[in-house]
Every structure is written in C-alpha cells, then in structure tokens.
Image (cartoon, rainbow, N blue to C red):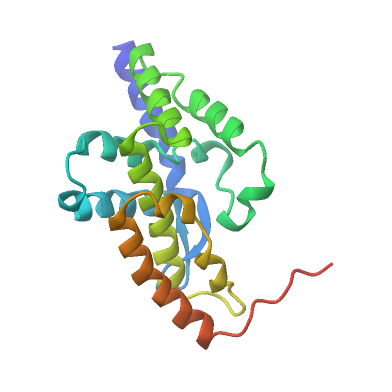
Length: 195
C-alpha cells in the first residue's frame, strides 16, 4: 500500500507541470504549458515513427514524457535564455530527483537514466527526441498568436545541431524554416530589451 501511495504522490506532484508556462503562445494567444508541449512532442514522435527506421518507439515516448518533467519543480527556462543558464541541466536533474523521490528505487533510477540519456543525447532515440523537441518548439513559435515584437528570427538558428542529425529532421527543418521566414518578413523586428 505504501508503494502505491508513493506512486500516486509522484503523479500528484507531476501535475504541477500543467501549470508551468512556457514563453511560447498557443494559436489562441495564451501561453502554452510544458505539459502541452510534452503532449505534442509525443504526438510528433508517433506521427514520424514510420520514417525513423529501426528505433525503440516505447523508449522514444518515455523520453518524450520525461524530458521536461523536472520543470514541474522550478519551471521552464525559455529557449532564448537557455544559453545564459549554465546550471540548467544540474538544476533540472536535482528537481527530477526531488520529484521522483517517492517512487520505488528501480523506477526512479529508470526515469533518471532516461533523463540523462536525453540530456546528453546518448542514444539514437534520445537524439531523435532532442530534434523533435526543437522542431516542436519552432512549430509552436510559428503557429502561436504571439505578442508584437516576437523574435521569429530566433527560430532560424535554434536547435540546428540537433535537427541536422538525420535527413528526416533536416527536411522537416527546411519546411519549418520557410514558415519562420514568412513570419519574419511580415512582423516588425523585435525590440531590444530595455537597459
């Protein structure tokens, strides 16, 4: 019974991810949640699975589900600010350890191992999820009803090292970059932050 209570406590804590808002906006103009981003990342994995050749789809979906799970504790760092956040990985790992502390040790170890795989792009499946994660973010940036001055040009360089890992992702990237260029052309340049 205690083990089940621990698993339920984990599920209850993970619910916080529904309230973690990202900098991206939905097509209706509200901020998306990390949980919504994760859902669409899973959907992308299913949508393109038949184009990936021999892969462990169950592992891909597990990686999708846990890749941002640690954000339930301290939130999301917007993509545009991640380069300046040198401790993002360490903090997210600590948050994930805290979040999973009520799980049985083997399950906690599996989740942490999957997160390490994703974070360091160790397996082909993790590299696939990294690429899809970047592509989902860019698609959302292009699709969202964004505020005036939104920096669409940021998309053109975002995650290139991950989306160049396989021909499929390069093809998807080319299509998505066309959308970005259209958005750049029709929107006023983003204003620099106030000093």
